[in-house]
Amino acid sequence: MSTPILELRKVDKSFGPIDVLHEISLKVHAGEVLCLLGDNGAGKSTLIKTLAGVHKPTRGEILLDGQPMAFDRPKDAQARGIATVHQFGGTFPLMSIGRSFFAGVEPTKGWGPFKVYDRKKANAIAVKAVQDFGITRIDDGDRLVGGLSGGERQSLAIARAVHFGARVLILDEPTAALGVKQAAHVLRIVNQAKRRGLAVIFITHQVMHAMAVGDHFAVLIRGAIAADFRKGEKTREQIADLMAGGESMADLEANIEGYMDSHDGHPPPPAR
Amino acid sequence: MSQSFSIGGLLRRPEAGAFLGLVAVLIFFGIFGGVAFLKPAGMSSWLNVAANLGIIAIPVGLLMIAGELDISVGAMVPFGAMTTAIIAGHWDQSIWLAIVVTLSFALVIGLVNGLLVIRTAVPSLIVTLGTLFAVQGIVLGMTVLIAKSTSVALKTEGPAKAIFGDFIPVVFKGQLQSIVVWWLLAAAAYVFFVHFSRRGNWIFAMGGDKVSARNAGIPTERMTMLLFVLSATSAAFVGMCQAIQFNSAQVAGGQSFIFNSIISVVIGGVLLTGGFGSVVGIFFGTITFAVVNQGIYYTDFDRNWSALIIGVLLLIAVLLNNTFRKMALTHAPKKK
Image (cartoon, rainbow over all chains, first blue to last red; front, side, top):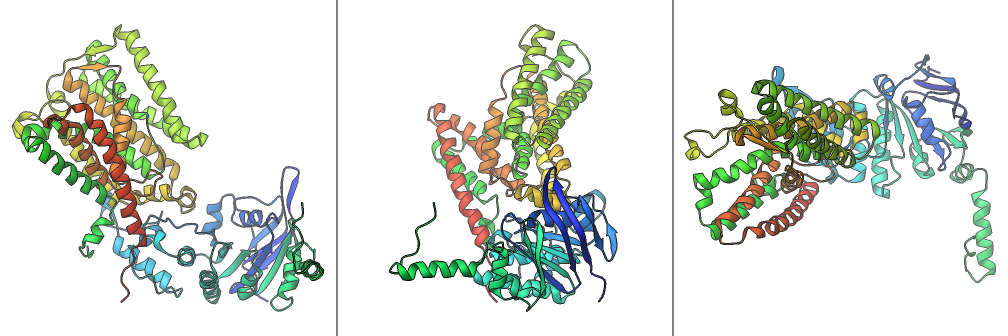
């Protein structure tokens, strides 16, 4: 097998006496989607921040194209093609699509101190970048970002990262706040990015969304990898159980159903 | 530019509310005050007010677009006036030296404001509230210490007087202050800076989402410092021009600039929480404010009512601006 674009080897991260990540080893190849599953507080955010150069690992190493890497700042990771897209991150609701897309790297025309922002060029490139991802509804770069749907906005953010040279795309809960249809939209974009040869790390706690796009899955529990498996090796129920920390969701469901059967269909009273 | 012209397109721009507000007050005072305030004498009365306020309102508005507030401008106006008057009047030094020293001090205070906001992460309203009082204290304390008075006279002659604080000859029957020219030049420069240069885009991005802006590689801290320096020096500049114009400086006064600049900016369509607005809007907002402020003298109303009109105008402007912004957000071009 080829060298993975990004690899983590036994990465630990602790803040003072608190160990947040424990011996995390992961690999992600080009054209592959790695789904990181985990409940709230499992250490997903810390792991993302470590990958994005916000935190430095306490122990262990991060390899990029097989070479050990140390990122001092998020910018270093970005310069090496690791882009993190937070929910709606990198898009500005009250700015036009073109201006938002190029925030910080605006194309200009003109000369010397009179260089002006090239609106036409920015709009054309932004609209094309988004349309290449199959969002054909966006055809006017002057529209305000805030007028787009949640899925479109997320797609804009992803298209932006890809346009500016991302090789590894870290998507932080991109579907969490979206409706079913909008989420499907984003999942299509993820597949599209994968087909273009990007390595995608997809963080979610929605098993269905993970299963729709993932090639490789890792379940994070209390800062450690509890399970690491490939597509088709586990069922949805098994993954949900894993995420719940080994506590069997199926058992829980069976318990509740049993209670309802013996209590005229009433669910059990909430635990106090 | 290939933008097609349409009424809807105009209404979706940030300055739409300010422009309609200006038209409304012009009609209002045209009916109740006659056309006297549109004649040279009347026009120069509100243009002078607008110019003094406008030079401060634009940088205050830019800070608001970037998600910050600066209320220390209320102390920077008397600071600028008094520093100039003490150096050029009380100590009888060259007016040019006074101008350089005044603006340099203002630059330092702007840097302090900016640094405090960046380093402490305390809301800029609180930081500049602190510097507002601190600078007021410095101005009062130093003036009494040096001049043994709360008012200092100065006499300026020659080119400095003509450039910074005299009435412009010939046009408008010689009733227009030279600061009006500064205001128009500054407004033109700001339009270029904000809407045409790439740095303008950074200001909007900062107000929209500061973290994303920083992640996108925008030097948010340097821009914040720059904007605070602009507002502090602009306010001191206005104070300086007033001292030269009226041949004296007082330690008090200037507080009215705090609210007046914010009102002008908000009427001008800038979103209080940042990320939206335009220089042209602030420009119209300032004129609207000045027309109401001065127009009342041309009517039979008691001038005490002008505050009521401004209050109502502000509320209407905010509601209108909200509506227009919503129109801009939901606007999607027709399907082809």
